[in-house]
Image (cartoon, rainbow over all chains, first blue to last red; front, top):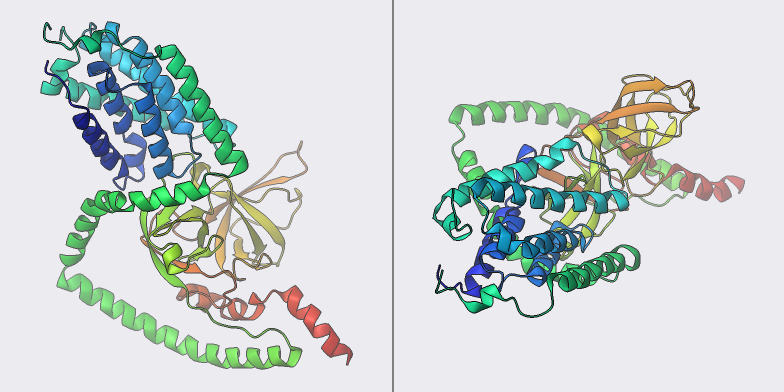
Length: 159
Length: 314
């Protein structure tokens, strides 16, 4: 594992932001994984010294501004998710691929549940169960990255 | 793993829990400031303008694809479309002639009553750049903004009916809340009997509902809802929705009425933004079907009758 430049973290988050900004609509929007959160989790596991809870909060605020909803909701969801990623970072990198995927899925679902609760408090309508599909496409995306070369760095025992 | 940086092993600074509490509290206070105090609107406007190039970049692949498929339309398709449009123009030309007569007659009557003169303001054609990214709301973004003199509150229509309303204006784009959104209400009238009501978006299934109407109300399946024009935002006579379901519960004094929007609320690229005071509206079917309604009562009926009274007393 070589030293990671903070710049590569910011560039990858910017790329994730671009992916998020693509004009998704309909089923595409429902199935779109949260690329930004996935990127954040990836860096929190791989480079916890550069990507911390503060980074997650800041990125969350940017996402809120772009989405045009209530400012702070994504920031809160990302902060909490980042906490659970950071707190168990040392254990997570020792997990095998399956265990890690399970934990990341739980993190993605946690972020969605937080957003869900905030929206319901804000008087929004409840979307159907399809709302949570994004977490599952997210974990599929995570697995693809996991099995690629990039994935070698986020678990020490890839079996 | 020997060459791993020591910093990776010992994270300096406050503990994760302390950070969590700090940033969660910060998020909550930001949310409060945004929702209750509306302090952050200006900041958001500025930042969204900054993000605009990024959004354009993200929209590039889709635009390219659309441009390509437009370019590759076959000769045959174009010919067919051309023929159809020529026919349509012919039909509408005939209707337009009678409209001119009606308009001049209408103007004459307005003068007679001393009512405010109707000024036709052209609607602005906008293109939908993307649908809202939030699955909890029904919103779309269009490519006109404050730079094009768009203001919040403008009605948005397409060729078949009302689509929604501009709710947030950024420098280069604006946010349109669709009539199916839970937060949008629109004053309507049943075309058949003139009954006034207020329609609310229901969010689910892209439908709108008519709450607070008694169970024995005179509404039938298939009734058409048009704008009543009493809010001064939507011109009167625009098609809004069609009643598709009527339910009356014995334990509730109100009827449950579900309607389907007439306009292609979820599927089109171009929409028209009307200015709030604009009395004459849109092109196409709206005018054809409601030619008289769309021009005449747009200065709200109540206003003209009030102004007409002193004249009548003389």
